[in-house]
Image (cartoon, rainbow over all chains, first blue to last red):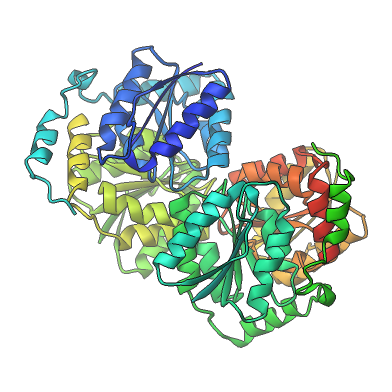
Length: 172
Length: 172
Length: 142
Length: 142
């Protein structure tokens, strides 16, 4: 399978380990970064990772940050993405089988590596169980449209990055 | 506080990170090993870590292996030890407050580092809530006596280690 | 605090228990789903709408897994929703993500853990500072 | 398989649900605590005793946290008990630890997750091999 993956600077090592794990299982991985531990912002990577899925370049996406919340929220705000933030195997299975989730998110500081790998295995192996009821729910979720103009615009966040560079955000 | 800690070879890095975390918080840590990634056997380290607690050398113990099960079971089989295998903060709190647990065990491949640290913080900070009911339950648990002769005997497992060295266990 | 709460049929029992907890903690509870027969989509939409109108401070949605409400809530403008299954994340996600809604899966999270998650979620405050750039980014996305 | 099951009062409801699951899966259920008013110590002792006598293949004990049954069960000769809160550990601990009893905390683990834990636990088999030296060590300790 083609897997799009992304993370923030808190869990770069964990993401790199997952890339190696996935490649070891024969998957092709698009690594959207971040690639080092320099402070950056999870929505950049959540959005990039998700857009590789909606564009068809990847089959599924995986996003990881400290708790998993921020980066999976940002992935879910991309049109056409149904992202599942999980900490256990069964929720991953459900999200794929019933909601046909196309991105899975986890907390690299919450879920241990063995469990993360098992969750990903189950997510990739599980198949959407098509039914009228499931199809209809997915249609309803997909009809909740976010900003279409955001998609594939690499400068979408520039205003905030400029403000950041200019000291507009107090650096706690 | 004085903390006794132990792990098997699957999670040596995770244990080392916990030692640094605890020392950074001002605790004194007795590191019972294992110290490298050479294949070894969790009961050796679960027993050693627990015995530092029952001897009074340490106030509390922390044990980690892949799932946490093996090493926490071995710590609990030491007389006077009440070990809690946990994956969440609230069970750690309960185990200390109600059962006066003196060892906590976690799966280094199950629980992420941030959650592990938070669980340990809560375990160390929580205080036993003395009551007649709690005292009585603890007495009943402590009355379930294991082999007393095992304690502080560094050669207790020699028969198995010899068998291991002689190829008596098929190496899967 | 004013807390908007809602559930689908599978989260109804846990929602009733969490309402009692919120009462005991002195919060004002705005139950958006007194009926027990909704699906998670409608339950989520009702809670989110109250948060968007700023009629409540925080929202809680309960169904079987939390995954569905997470998908639905986060498609709404200005909503940052976390699917929470541990107490540590409940605290962290307020501090770092300024999460306005949490989802809890009653099939995954036991009732005692659910209570501790809700307590940690309501005790914590947003850290602001450097975290605001990420929240601004999320809020621009939708 | 023959499964010995027991619970204290706080685990009673989940135990009833797990019994139904075991029935559906075709296992023989030996309920050691038909009464709902036991504490976890007595419930654990009853299940452990059946396992020690080899009258059942595996045991399941349910209370609010799983921590108490873990402490009690593992003080018994030949018993290796895991407190299980995730499906992956349920599978791994059979494979590596030859776990004969699991504890589940009904206050921490939701009912759907509990079912998946039990299924994974009963589907898995002990790996033996190098793992046996560790199991031998545990069994010597008590």
